[in-house]
Image (cartoon, rainbow, N blue to C red):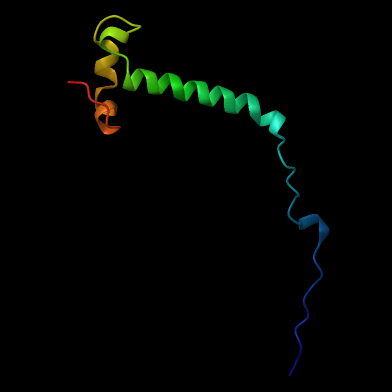
Amino acid sequence: MAQSVVPAADPATAAPVVAPISLKAIAPWAVFAGILMLVLLYFIGAEQGATSVISGEGVHEWVHDGRHLLGFPCH
């Protein structure tokens, strides 16, 4: 039987090494995403009635289906 020859790995085609991302670089984006999620949660879950920041029914109508989908009562 003949043995197959496996060519040596070419360093030019090797996968690049990915540098880890530091917590210091991720922290501002994580804070921004957290604040954005809290604002969205407020508008979907609490923006109506006595706690309303924006007057009228516009916000309520825009998030009405999402409110029911997430289990928030609105009627």
